[in-house]
Length: 389
Image (cartoon, rainbow, N blue to C red; front, side, top):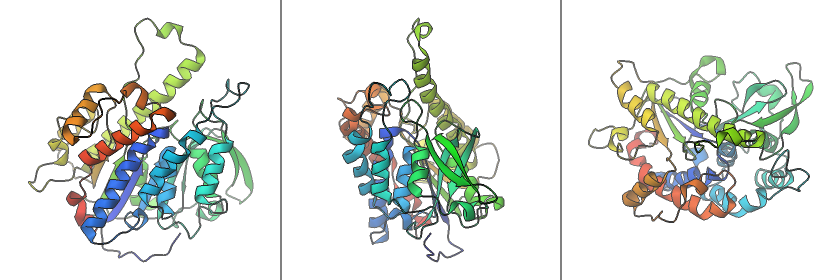
């Protein structure tokens, strides 16, 4: 990791990016807006690796996090999806489809080309700290790969190729095959494990783990908490209830339930993490002094239960531990219509049932439109500029 000197007394900035396949285009558009606004507000262009001290991601969020940490501009990472999405989500041969829909070779080649086959977790090309989530299917637990120099596993893990870690984090069951690679054990002896998507865990939204990595002393960083000391921006890939028409659930096959469980697990993880972060985090404040969360009550960035709990938590009397901003969208017809009214970006022709599919290559232009609208509505870096001075 780059040894850029950071003043010890300035606020720390964290960024967390959810999993969600091609819907990663939605947070990618938010990243473009964040970058452009910060460039304008601070009077000079800088990549987001210079703006954030720790960037965490799961699955498609791991792709974005790794790219940003390597110094790529946000638009370059958005274009990665626009240009290579159709190549990555190309149907596997019929003989392989009972196990997975897509072959591993295209995504692996794209990751090697983008990040460099020789780039490692401890590489100096990484300009900021990262935290990438994968599930070790061999051991049955969640793994958090980080280049944090204080992490107790860094000496063994720093030589791991970055593309292997990102590929492991994005190995979504039923979509891609598991990814096997060797990781040194506590004695430094390589052990080969099979990994699957980090979204098959409680960390499809990795916000709380990013917070812990940054603040818990046992993780080796221990940055101070407090609403003026710590900012965490959490970017989602959109969400929607996973529904089954009455009378149809009884006819679901094993494969049907596999797809259902994966999507619903991601929804539940996102809900849990956002509610938790809303309880411990303070929403940014408008110039008027009103809470940013309250200001968008007609178009909440979380589910109704999340929004209700966010406002209720303000009266719990507990000390807030950080400033927390969530950027995401409910992918329903009503919400998209509201976004159109709020932003003047026309989403009338966007089908919410299609645009939320993780592998909907034909929906890439619509995902981009949704991302632009979400960014226009929810990204207001002037409210957070005190963290970036």
